[in-house]
Image (tube, rainbow, N blue to C red; front, side, top):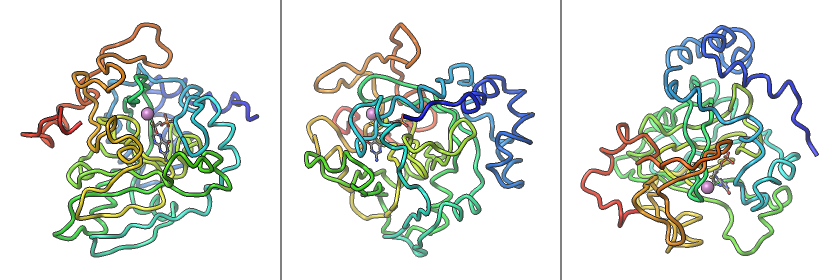
Length: 303
Ligand SMILES: Nc1nc2c(c(=O)[nH]1)N[C@H]1C(S)=C(S)[C@@H](COP(=O)(O)O)O[C@H]1N2
Ligand SMILES: [Mo]
């Protein structure tokens, strides 16, 4: 069993103090992760989610309480089971309705797209939440670079399928691999982030290494982990959860306190590390940035 070393916990103290963080960012913490040019941009954009810095969930909780059904449905056992999962080498195929399809290594993506820090809320459909300091780059940057065609309407994401390393994938109950989808304009929203790290470190396996999505205004299941394929499509793709339980999970899955899950209310949530439940926010607190995407849509029907 892999113990959390004290050196892995240290960055928390740094992250909780912005000024100290910015000082260290230039040297130790992000210095090893970001190319020199990327650093200036990271500092410039460090305000995204800055208001959440005081609410950060601990590194220990973020890396030991996970949903990653490819390993197990037991949140507290994912970290152990993912320990030997191979994340290098890794390529992501970008294909479909694009003029410049390609296969990209993680290193190539990191070279091409400057990464920044974004502190986002994560709200699981089950009713718990966290605040996580991700490192990543906008999904829009990658999509623009492959030039979606005039027919492009949706984006489909596919997780790795590797039953030899992922014991949960031997479970015939689910239809592997895990897949997800976004409308193209949702995918192009600046908040949609392709994530390569958290707390200034490489992304841990249990959190979806080496590349996962963070779509903070939607329930956590939209934030697909360990992505191997990004396909731009004409039609709305089916997804792991809409296929598994279509009566319970919709394609949009926007966080909405007013639309209960068939089996429980979504009005409140338990922030991991807190005692009292808090009120769930519309679009998980990102209403200003994303509400216009859904103008004229019935959010009760398009849940
Ligand atoms: N491939 C894959 N991606 C996934 C999941 C999964 O089981 N498999 N679980 C989702 C759910 S339900 C949530 S809440 C988040 C949890 O992310 P975290 O464990 O990093 O907090 O990942 C999402 N992405
Ligand atoms: Mo979730």
